[in-house]
Image (cartoon, rainbow, N blue to C red):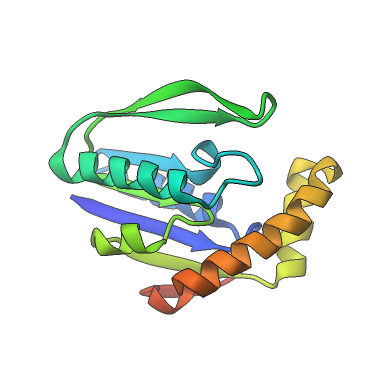
Length: 163
């Protein structure tokens, strides 16, 4: 069973790279793709203990080849309001800010880090998602940097790419 994590600042292209991996790898294996946006507990609690516990649950199920049910966050309602069942697969790809945190690395993940200048990343996000999240994204940039520094995510990546 293979575990791939794709991490980096907001707007770096993590989702695009994950989709490419999914497309390429799914020809010869079963692949699950987890988007961190579905797991975050809103803007203020996104990178906290709940996220780590959810990742632990997903990874343990993947390692044991068991199905797993997770809660999905609805960004319009700003609450968890649905669930998703993850069936066993040969490969698990986790992408998004926080995907490469220690619990994922400790499980043997291959970590891809995508570098991008913060101002370029935020411009991409706002172009994609709209200026209505500009204030939240300013705080998100601070929160993600604090997370990356304390977790040493980039320093532990096996592969580093510039966007």
